Image (cartoon, rainbow, N blue to C red; front, side, top):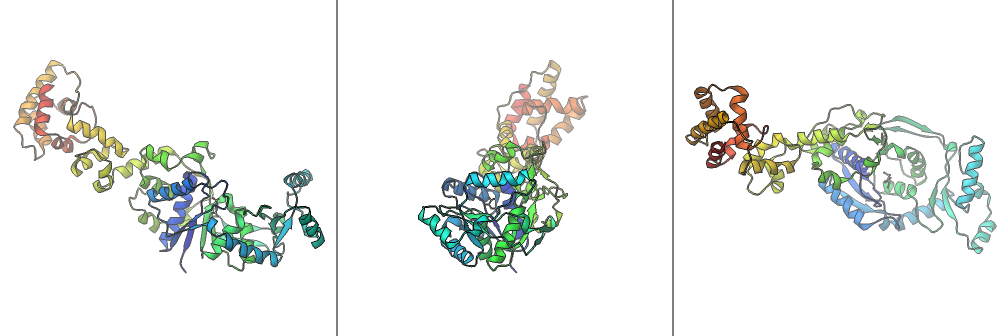
Length: 443
Ligand code: GLU
């Protein structure tokens, strides 16, 4: 059986870290099994859906490297929903209701006041055809509820949460369609999953009770429910879903110098006890992806972890992946020399300035200036193509009494203007010879 997963965002805003994780987990699950990953745009709510968000969702997935194998849009599928809806109405599984929001609210309060679950009392089921006709004549349009089957208990084995049981008698018949004909999320989603052959629905645990309802919808539609898995929600470092986490999206992370590979590597493991694998190729993450590794405890998203994983990724990024982001003229050798010192690709520009100059060295005392003048003389005679740093420091160790920090630090400071930085052995050959000699002589 082909594994088909889907990511089904509503284009009512940007994707935030939580949605991105859902998209990624679905991608990983599909890729692990050589299956298909679908993007389904849940745009039944036409008042709140925006085309710019649809474009941004596509662009974000592309940036992350999560390329869908197909795209569907709910707004193009209203005929399909209508047909399925009519069948369910004819079968008595969808019925008309007329309660106003205020009436429902009151009923809920009464039930809660008696310590009962706030479940719709199905009073609309007692209406006769004459009652419905009278409502229609009075211009009252119904909204529509799905009739839960109280006789069949609901159970599934969740890919993350294990065996799940729900008593349908404890569940309200959900409204599936509003009086103006517009759709609520639940039924179109089940129709689509059934029609598109979605084999695995993997989403956040905030959907667990929706799943219980949708299991019955699949059956009412004559379809086998897919496999379900519900991931524990992400929390911020403070232990709850922070405001920042709820709004943090790709644009902001990219502006902070986060590489897509870092976000993918971290989110692929968050919520498992597995260590983060800073893999450049998400296919490697897919190979080791396993739903059974996910726990039920909330997954903590720590931006400090993301920064660390980002550095590990930057240290591995090959030149051809970053060349277009690097300063003009910077070579692959220079990138490889500088890369271990970066936590973000953009910082390469700072080191490139150190290589090309001019640099500003600190004010040295007379003794150090004399030492640097001697170093400049030695440097001028060196073969720059053959490890000039080892040759330079080796010669100076012989001719001066300096060693350790006293030997190395003034050279580094004069050559780079900094106290720390990339390994001088790899850095020095990148500095033009005449420029290097001049920097030492200027000391
Ligand atoms: N559009 C729904 C949401 O964003 C999809 C949920 C689902 O995966 O079924 O919550």
